[in-house]
Length: 251
Image 1: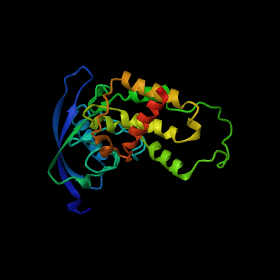
Image 2: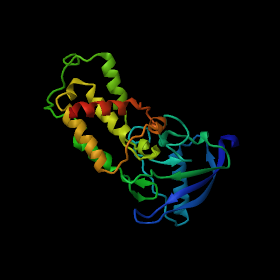
Image 3: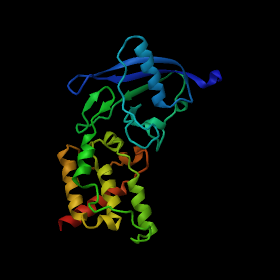
Image 4: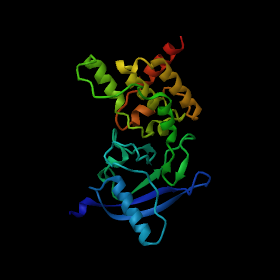
């Protein structure tokens, strides 16, 4: 490995013992970090060093490390998921950082996402929004033939564009209002585009929007920050669809 592939990074990491703890930043320096590492692998190295020193490792959330599960909820240098557009934090690599750069790492900041510890937040509010109506109620049985329910390619593609939402919460973390409208809108728009979602269409949008408000998320003010940081590129048009569906359901 070339020495050009090794960098030193200075980390400012948010440490907080729990939701009632005041919390603070702690400084760490890591040397000889290979630029081929992912961001989470770099945090693994940090924790290995801390454990060798008999210190408490930094808690951070992760699972698949493939940009699919949405668990890697980190604000990196003030940007949810970091500087690389359409890239989850777990897919971000250290080659996007400079030698001797200072990197600030924080958790999502939102009332509806209370901090559990350090960089880990409770995102169960999203689960409760989904429980309110983000599904289709029907007997499953055997899978139907592909051509049994005709759907135009345009509508199918549009539904898939919304269905790729991984529920990470970056939209909430980036929004000045901590709005969950992009997440909720994507889940509503996905089913609104498909005939399978038609029977529960009105009930679904009302229940999910009302649950979103109960969870304490703010209102959407069309800042567009949510679309800018979404790691899978969900369009803000999802929010427009949600609003249209909600008005239609009321009248």
